[in-house]
Length: 544
Image 1 (cartoon, rainbow, N blue to C red):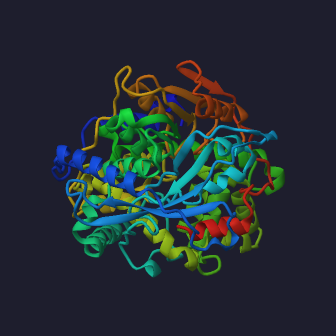
Image 2 (cartoon, rainbow, N blue to C red; image 1 turned 90 degrees about the vertical axis):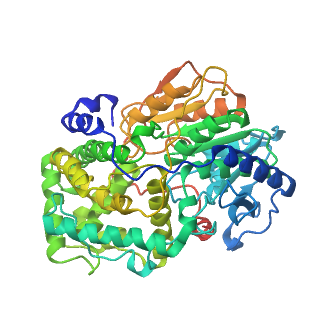
């Protein structure tokens, strides 16, 4: 979303909504001194133990240099001698070979730790990215380190419901749900929140962003790094910013890619409202692109005509789901994902076109729930829900959610209600809430950091990057103009990559703000995904 979009019709509604803080249960008041001591103790233990790296689970199709291990952290940092949990970690050592001159040795600069966001996403496959050309200079200088945050995959996994119940299809997705629809979703949200509490018990309260930041410091120590070099994308930028505020003297270099708004008042109810508004702009971009390729897809020569094609497909799927599993909800999910990554636009347009011409196959392949990924998807949602619900107060009265999102859906119907249903369990959450930390550093407290943002990013609206830039003294903001892909480091934009390489390899940054021209628009018929061979991608997924 463009910064100026705050003054659009959708934005004007948000300004009134954001003026009042959401109601909620009183925030938990942890003993910050005890937790600080607990983190220091856990880090000292991790430094002494290190990481016993060895063969990765499912290593058959992985590169020989890929290693895996475990780092132990306290479940509760206020009680560091109590229950411990293990975080799964992966690594590929620095090649120390110049990708442009194999005879030239490159000095090793330590570990580069990465988090892809979520909450609920694993970073274990990250070291494989060093095989892509855009990452080879970094892979020469750094050990590439990924990990699964607490709750994710093998890292003390969370679950809130039977995975077999998680990815059911077909499902509806009305842009303006009826009262009956809303009441059904309230029942489901209550049940989901109850399931999280019943399956995890008292441990549930310890899955939140402050602990994710503390875990990151223990990981730093286990890797024998005096200071942390870190790249966090999306949600990873948020707890990376928490880390920078909590442990500024432990920071070497940090990249915040597709930065989330860290203002405590935005965490997380208001950030989700802003995201729903921004997705409407991104959906408009997608429709404009599809209309520009009417000769290829035949979905309409104007955005309005493309919308009618989409609505026609949605109505047909409501009456007769494709393949028995793809209804309006699955169609919307596929197009919402394309709102994150514009290289998915061709596959979505192609599938929609084929379906309207009588061939449901591409749409079924793209959007049908997959049983083999149900457990992973259920785990990801459980962690997402636990972290966001634990992090801050949420409105506990349905009338607040209904009022704010009914207003917003009048001008931004594309994502609004699906976003509500995803987050509504937070209204009925049974664990205590944290008080969001005020992310802020003064001059000289933190080494210079790099913030990356695309102007039309819907998942992390651009205003969030501006806010983080204001709050972290000495930070530099690099903007990819007129683009909206979520996560821009290491992509096709050579300008963005040059700034990342200069910073991480040499510590060089541009002036306070810099900009890059937009990346090329996707080409019709070009599939998403490239670089890492399919077998390796599948093996990496098994690491989760």
